[in-house]
Image 1 (cartoon, rainbow, N blue to C red):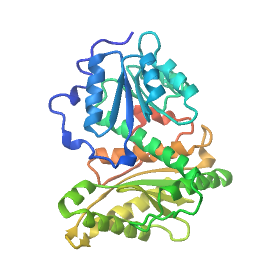
Image 2: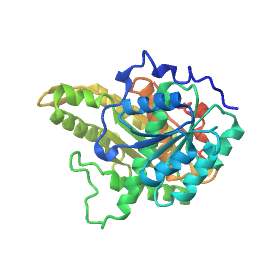
Image 3: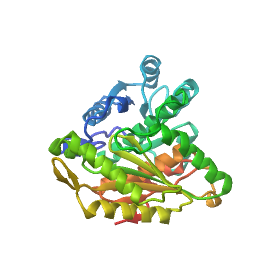
Image 4: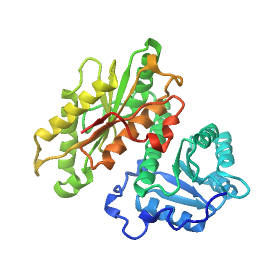
Length: 357
């Protein structure tokens, strides 16, 4: 039975919680609505407050039946649900959502006291994307929810790109890099080529550290110049004939490295970090110094044992590495493995043995 001791579940979200650690406001197109489902009113209230403070839109339900009624009329990108509930439990709710949301994908994050391998496999079999063990630190909860936001954001961009007539530009007008539409059109092709020929493929997820503070201190023009400088620096660190990068939103970029294993990705990330740290960007508002956090992963089809990796698996692994770097204070690069069965969703595997200092 589920424990009724809720006092310490989210203790770090109570007094002493550091609001400065929360991400800043998101652009409208990146906003994400989360449906929190738990039969415990205190848990619901604390989760809702934590998520709203992190600029997420939140709906709440006290049962699976109530959650289904809300989802029938309100579009929610993420479902954060308790596992053990009366009447219909979290697994049944997840199966119901998967059976009735074919027109749009809902990211399901299971909240549970269960952490055994059999429980994990049962959750994945029911259609859950990830899970959080109750009592986990606030930072871990926010990191996993942020990954959910990014995955659904990528999915929406992919669906939108299918309706484009092909005449729109594939270039980001601000930085000159490829844009999200380019990424969602060509990264699946790179992955398919990697799978077909058994060649490795590496992907880096990059985020400019403290970009909001740059805009606040120096102004938006200086922030834009910093983004252009990042692109120029990144392009100098990759091969011109086959590697490429794309701006996916705000200060977030993806770098794609065909024919590259994880050790090659580590070298690119290290060159990029060292190049950015070696000199400040000259702007009209004065010199601006900044660093970058990097998450990376590599697909090596010849050695995959769990089946072919999916695009979602690759993006999720790169994001896990990125948020591991962010949790270390930024200016780090961390690699995470890709799993075709999504077993990497286990909290114990959030870290990585490929860590660059």
